[in-house]
Image (cartoon, rainbow, N blue to C red; front, side):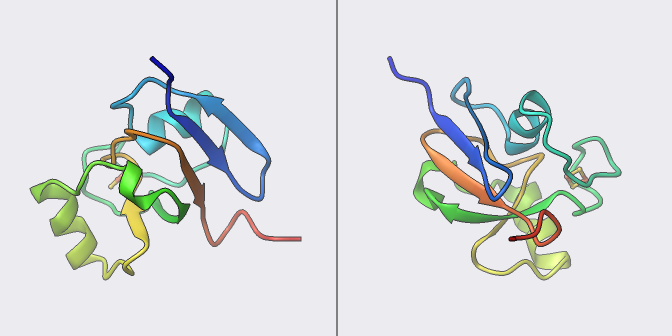
Length: 100
Ligand code: FES
């Protein structure tokens, strides 16, 4: 079985990751800095990321993620990294990683 590949752009970091891992877990494994202040409890919304490619390869938001997305006014392509689970290849970015 092939493992999902996660890419963090424009940082150029990528890794194969266990299916079902969160984006935050993948970021930690790739040593990518990702804002958070609730350690993944789905409270702060600081772990907001944008999905560049592969949005369909993330599990649909659960009730808690939907609440964070609504409370923090996420855009359609944004997800809560500590809650969104990876099921297939996906490419992720944030506003603060910055494009050259
Ligand atoms: S780390 Fe707080 S909502 Fe994700």
